[in-house]
Amino acid sequence: MPVRVLIVDDQEPFRTVARTVVEFTDGFEVVGEAETGEASVESAHELRPDLVLMDVNLPGISGLEATRQILADHIGGRPVVVLVLSTYEAAEYGPQAEEVGAACFIPKSEFSPERLLEAWSAATTGPTAGTSSP
Ligand SMILES: [Mg+2]
Image (cartoon, rainbow, N blue to C red; front, side):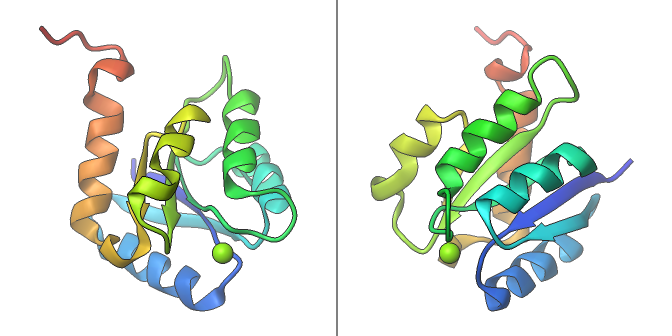
C-alpha cells in the first residue's frame, strides 16, 4: 500500500514541485491537493491521507492552524503525519510546527525524495510512533 499524500500550498509552482518529488519517491502517491488551510482540513477529512505536506503561509487560516485542526480531527482514527514546509528557515517555524503536532519542518529549498523518506521514516518508526528505544 503506497503512502497517500495530500499536498497543501497556495502556490501552484510549489504544488507542482511537491507533486514531482512525491511521484519520484518510491512507495508514495499524491491523492489530493489543497490551496488553503480550510480546504486542507476538509480534504484531509474526506481523503484520510497518511501524510500531509503543509505550507505555513496560506490565505485564511495558517498552515500551523490547519495542522492543529487536521490532527485533532484524526484523533482516535487513522493516524496522519503532517510535515510542515516553508520558504523560511527552520529556526523561524520549526518550534511552532512541533508545538502544533507536526512531525517535522522542512525548508522548501531542501525538499527532496531523500528528505521525504527520512521524515516519513522518522515519524513512523521513531519513539513517538510507539516503538520503544533505549
Ligand atoms: Mg504559501
